[in-house]
Length: 151
Image (cartoon, rainbow, N blue to C red; front, side, top):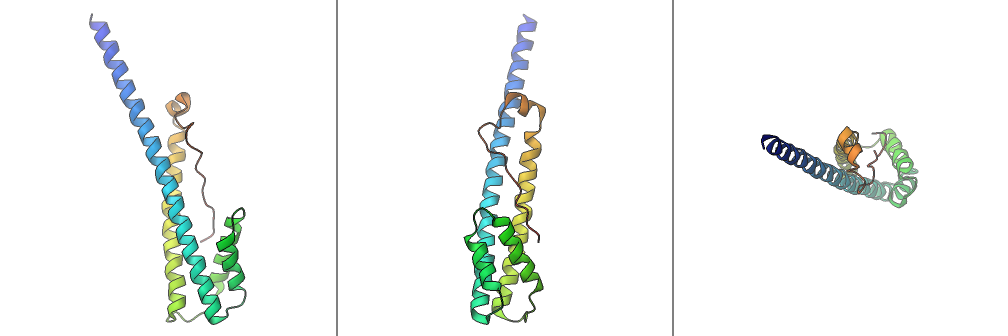
């Protein structure tokens, strides 16, 4: 009789752990997805601010780079990297309100990218857990990917 109770307790404990693990996987993947959305929004804001700056101040090739970043779908990382490299080289008056908007957007992009990278790293780490792989608990979720841009 005692062994039956032991088996039931063991099954309940394992079931509870697997349920907790599955819930954690769901939350981490949702967080990575939300962080990707926030990063996309910040990248769009930065590109829009750069486009406004380029239109108002007629800054060299900044407008085509900003438009490419706004319109990019497949080659988004490359377009964002090109915009980042040009903004880094841009010599402008920091007291200018438009430049300040671009610099502020750049800071928010850095923060959003860090949050996204941390979320993806956490999700990928949990996906490598032996029990997660054995029970295939991640089959409902696409594998999260890093957004690799140079900031």
